[in-house]
Image (cartoon, rainbow, N blue to C red; front, side, top):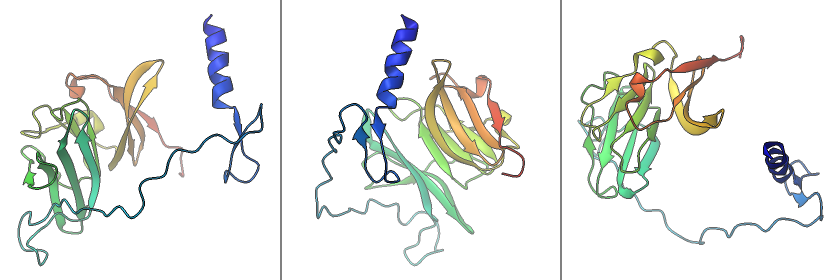
Length: 205
């Protein structure tokens, strides 16, 4: 039964075929092209939601957000947004909005490294968040009120980005670092208490 389910899944994953360098695909069994999702509405303007005027007068508007890199929101409350970044001397740490970007505040207590390269919201409400920095991964369990450095990630280099996935069917959080691909069981309890493992990058890569 398990083997039949696996084979069925494999057929689904390999049913599409491209003969033009991935410009288009067709169903290997019928030759028909799969239906494409609807494109986003045209002429939809972007709306600036900040952050601005964070910190001192490094820039003309009095802000020091740096180059904003990761931006994440809580699934159950999209008004809760976290962002951060760094650019030369400008590194604001983690910035948070609870009103969909109308107002921003710094939430950096305990965050010794304010150069933010990655963010990930673990829970649905935006209370449990991890941040990637050149010093490793930091974690907050109280909506950014305080951060704890996950010591197991020290020495991995820049923690660039986070993705959720699975290992052996169990949910895991993956983090791309200079040293390789880190992973930890994805639970809503403190990840600092879990065993973080590193799949090291091949030599010379």
